[in-house]
Length: 193
Image (cartoon, rainbow, N blue to C red; front, side, top):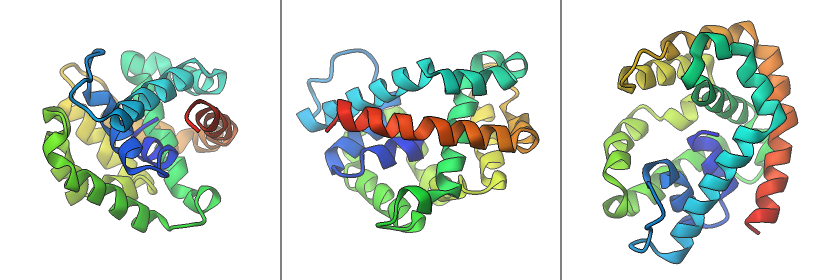
């Protein structure tokens, strides 16, 4: 899952949300410099990624475009799934609308900016300026995100073309997400009560 889903799944705790957000930027096991609840969020992020990567529905989604994108397929599906969460936000969060949730997440990150890993600090200004999380709700927003990610990858990824596959297989990916995401929500509620 990508940034929006990680944030959504940990929304009941600011520290957990912060740790979950920076999970991709923290390498290794040495996390002694983070508060315990932030470490819990990092562990939650890793747990979500492990659950997602091994889930049969996620694998089915990846197999649909694996030949074309190879190593980057999982990243692309993560972004696609964030699109379906954003586009169907009211089905998952009746307490606050997507713009309010995005603003809250950006504010939490901004307040704790100094403790973020350097790699996270590099993307935060762009994430906020272009409101990535809110823009995940549209295919055009996904297209911009994937093109930006493609520019930042060290190897040729082809991600800049992936929104075309989202359009082609939109119904199939939507059905996959709708089958997968409730499983992930149940899993995180049990693993991180």
